[in-house]
Image 1 (cartoon, rainbow, N blue to C red):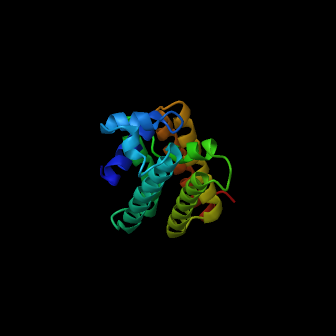
Image 2: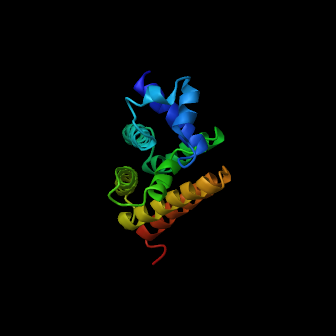
Image 3: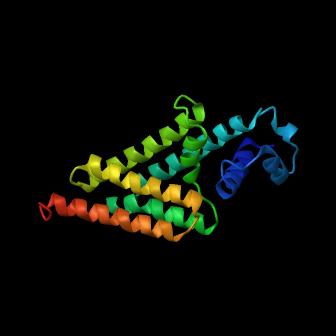
Length: 191
């Protein structure tokens, strides 16, 4: 049993079924093993969830680094790219970023390792957005970053419940509007 294969399969299951409903039995069945085969690596569901979220966070961090290094895209395109990627996942009935939102709800204690992992991912997203906004030379980049992250988290939260692709399009349009308003402020059009 390869660790990365198990985590990848578990992640797919979590993104499709949700954090609250995915069980070790479901994963074992999908992998063609028994739950006891996984016990040496993940003694319980919580240990597996932690590893899956950490694995997923590493995937997202890698994507962000690659995107930041892509010189063919403008800062604005990089800021909006998350919505294109999210839309592709939603078309495949996968809801990746929702896992971190759900993790904060399922594990509300701030000192819980899964909650902390989700908070780290949210902070990494905010820092990514803030860095690109500085590159974009946006007026009041910190405030604009907060606004853009609020739109993204709102989109992910709504996807948890409604699972509708159109919500990604609406969030992307809102993010575009936020960027355009920031540019207008920068040039004094909204003074």
